[in-house]
Length: 386
Image (cartoon, rainbow, N blue to C red; front, side, top):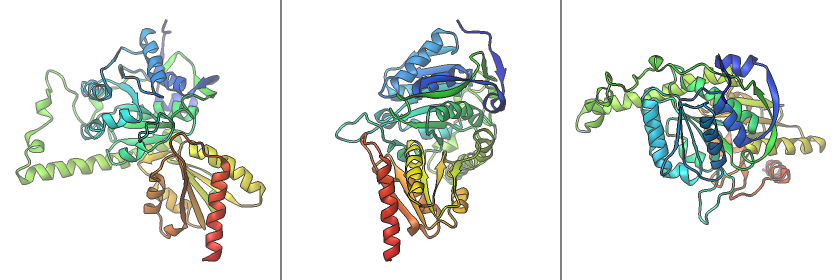
């Protein structure tokens, strides 16, 4: 039975509330975050490796932690229905991954375009042929320009903290955008580790839709009072001007999220020995593998540091420019075939020939530390012979 819950601000919950240790999987960490998020509605559809987390969220509904929950008929139906619940002023949660992300792709820019503070967890997996359910995060590349904020968790602890922080960030009146919270499937979702959790009887303060920059739908504010004709009529100048200004406001709202990410999550990046002449820039599970490589390289006498990207949107361009100012070699390991993070880094930095895009593994391949070490040694050898 659900205990009597004490409501806390996000700052109190994340930064000051006492915590206890739990030995849980990443999927369980998602459910623990939702338990404390004071969610009005969650909607689910199973897809591996996301399924377990939403099964556990269903258990939360049975325990009284969520006001409404059901399983929809497919991924698009889930993300469309969760959008409707948000439009009505509810705090909502859902999750998807891989082919589910692609099937429902239309909804992500719709969420952002209507300024809805939806939190969606992604447990990233392969989407390519031949079919693969194995971990890789190519789907993040497809979402970069949908307008949503994107946080990338390295482990279960970050997954828990980022989901709770996502509600506070998304619901800030000067932001009010959807937040995707990403983790690399199986590596995080199905691995058990120690996660520090606040008490079971605390929850976030409820969402107040009256603070939203766009009114919630109700009998006094039906959809036609918000979705105005100029945004739908493509035959005159005013429609283009209205659409362009709204796009600009969404981009500006994402930029305003920076201060809230810094306040609740300690910044858009995390560093270790960032003054080193050799830097690894990584996100998600690739950051964990990078730490292993760095330990071995330091033991071999190389001065190597790490810059972990926690927020992909907004992207930490200024932070990377400053942190890599004196770096001679920058290596970007990734769990995807396309190298989307390396492209972002190269587009951000001057003298981007310093950037080695790789190693990249995908389709469920692991990334042994030796791959990262070999990429660094190859990059150093090229620079000695240039």
